[in-house]
Amino acid sequence: MPRLLPITLLSLTFAYLLPRHYPALLSPSPAITFLTVFLPLLLTSALYHVLLYPRFLSPLRYLPGPKPSTLLLGEFPLIYRLPTGFPHITWQKLPNDGLIRYLGLWNTERLFPTSIEMLKEILHTQADVFVKPNTLGGLSTILGKRGLFFAEGEEQKHYRRMLLPSFGVTHLRKLVPVFWDKAMEMVDCIIREAQIPTEDETVTDEEREKGRLVDISKWASLATLDIIGTAGFGYDFNALKNGEEANELSNAYAKLLKRDRAAMGWIMLMMLLPWWLAYWLPTESARTIRKSQKTFQRVSTQLIRERREKQLSNPQSKDSDIKDNDILSVMLRSGEFDTPSGEEIARDQIMTFLAAGHETTATALSWALHALTLHPAHQSLLRTELYTLFPRGPPKALTHADLTQLPKLRNFCLEVLRLYPPVPLTLRTAKRETILNGGVRVPKGTMVVVVPWALHRSTGLWGDDAGEFRPGRWEGYGQPGKECTINSWMLQTFISGPRSCIGEKFSLWEFMVLVTGVVGRVEVRERVEGVGRRLEEMGSIVEIQGGITGKPKDGRVWVKEVEWGSSRGEKEE
Ligand code: HEM
Image (tube, rainbow, N blue to C red; front, side, top):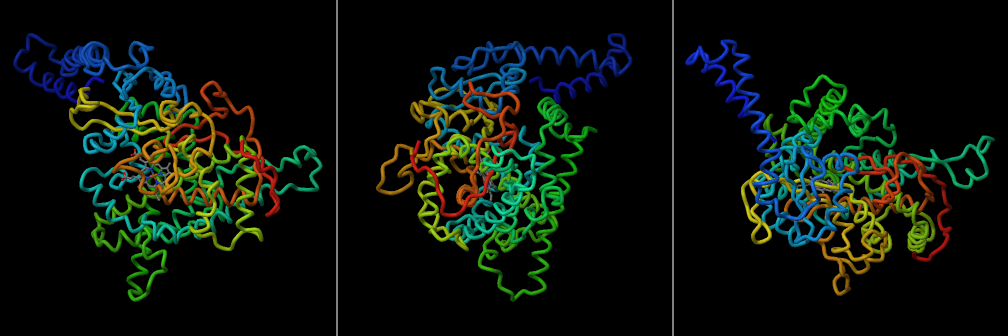
């Protein structure tokens, strides 16, 4: 991309100086002088960066990759047309040594690591070189600019150390019953919506047998918002109770995640302009972002102040066992956020956890339902396993020890997270020039694209059945003394290395509990057919709603309540 800022500054300087020193040479109008200098400079710079450099000069031009399909836009049209991560599934099949190079918008170079060795180098050994790029800046409006997600270097390490008590196994074990309470509340809501009005004569027998169409994605989103509120900040947003419309947080997130034409157009603009310029545009999408950001900031600040007031009004009171080490307590206890500017950082941290910790797990649950509808035999297996452990009905409180007694559930959830990673792709940029793969010179500023969606479908990494849904592959995984061919670097759902997801265990257990609640009490069947363009040839039979997370566009599935203890079919596919 041409460097707009230096070109503009240079042109402005010329526009100011030239007419003074050479009045006869150039137009006395500063605007015309500016354009006379600016346009040729812009054109030359564009020619160099868009055409000359990537094709004839870049040290990366010898790496394997797709043949450029456009002159100026690289592979961008394909990337824009297909769901996130899909083009990479094809590209990774090209013979390569762990690195694929392709061109993005305006022929900017992208490196796509395809081997475990290369992932280790980028995400671990050289994690301090490959940092989060500025292009992610737009996300900071939702995720909190000064939160853990955007922190770098020592600051990021410091925050992570500080927050460890909230994400340690001892504390997380105590959260499993909290997850369970919310899972039960969520399933109550789903069942209420799924109850067929028996008097309704318009319901056909076939439909009666199927149950009722329910948008479970919506309930999943509300449940995970309530969970992060209760488990992370000791505050129940009551999103499930009040519904999406009435809850200001879930309402703001829902509006943000909407992908209509206007929103997509605005996202295009975000790619073409600096994000802060797009942020201030007088468009509906930009206004929604600004309004939602204000809501997130206000609610987060309110959480901090309410907890502080409670502590001040009764300093002797001992918090509950869970609140004692929740995210908010751990932060406030550190004393680092006591100043007004400190409060703003604490607010950003809360925004980070609200956003990073809620839609991601809800997306995982949406995919789990998709898998359950596609593989009814697995659904029966999970139900049988659960009913065998709890023959007399759903337990009052589900514990972590119970979860360890449900290996089929764990394998199913891991397989969902493998085949349908909620974050399909993430980015890094080289902070300085470096060497990869023992000899590839990577210039400063090169963008690296880590694509779990494609990597998890790589036959080179996962074997010939990479594209198949087979929970059995996880048998023995992470269990000492048992054999399993999968190693932790193969699963990039949470990204490996020092910038991995701090909430990995939190979300895995939360996800397992939510799936348990669903399969124990309802049967889900085929999702809505014929919604938009199918992507069968790319290994998907649903249309995917893109964005930071990628999930089935239509969250509705047929739902029918089942009697606890009844089970059908037990054969694994
Ligand atoms: C299935 C659910 C989840 C998935 C798939 C997921 C995925 C990810 C991924 C891929 C990253 C790395 C992003 C990058 O480096 O570009 C990440 C980072 C992060 N996640 Fe998650 N996440 C999930 C749930 C959660 C939960 C429940 C929480 C909090 C309670 C959380 C908090 C965070 C934070 C704070 C970071 C930034 C960590 C750092 O940079 O040090 N995530 N997550």
